Length: 317
Image (tube, rainbow, N blue to C red; front, top):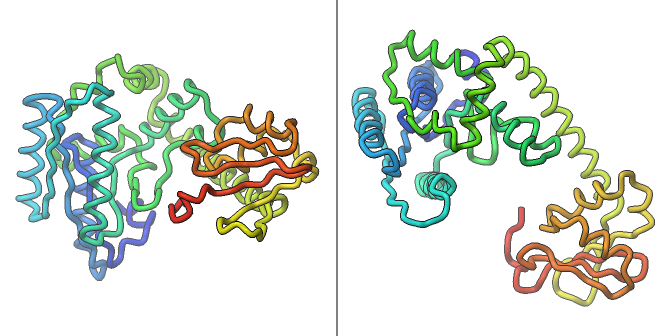
């Protein structure tokens, strides 16, 4: 509990706890329930629960359990039920709908954060999934503690620690039967890691992840400096903002392919091959970004980045 309190400033905060009915989120709720009563903290918590009705009676049991817990603890509970009928992946769709609802609730009631129950094991499993699919440093630094309005206070805790806490505090939870279904890649990875790693190994890996996160920040700081060095905002007769990149400046960077990708990926240019073709093409050639939000045009020895007029008012941050 002290580790959680030291991790973030909770004073005067309004936080939603996303609760599924599993041990992770119920431990998270219990921790916040105990913390909120600390002197002078003035922390407000409420619970969000989504019922996708994907596991029949199990889903209904979770629903009842959460309602009982919130009633006993006198915590306000917000629930949302969904009926997933689309042919696309139900897990992906459920995740998208869940986060859309979370965001709406946050804005509607002016809360500061939504707390999620992801822990250290989840973070390490995510790293292996990313490695299998292909990734860079961003994909191997693990899940981040805070991303905009989402916080994950249990990231420094292992699954073993969470289970131990739940048993000590006599917290009741419902085991999600889909967590053992090996048609999902995460479950396959989890099974392998559980055989290979003990609790101490997970804690050791956590030290490495913290170092990687710091190194990732250093790399981003470096890239921001490079962008200022080679990407200049220009004033033209056109209404939209434009940026120019002198190719001679770009050619001073090595490896040039990585720099090229990193500089333009924030503008939705994800196809490195197209960017390279543009560099070696004749003056006047241009390429569009994903969804045509932006386009880059080659003009003599420079690349000029334009925002398409119809997206001028869109926030791309």
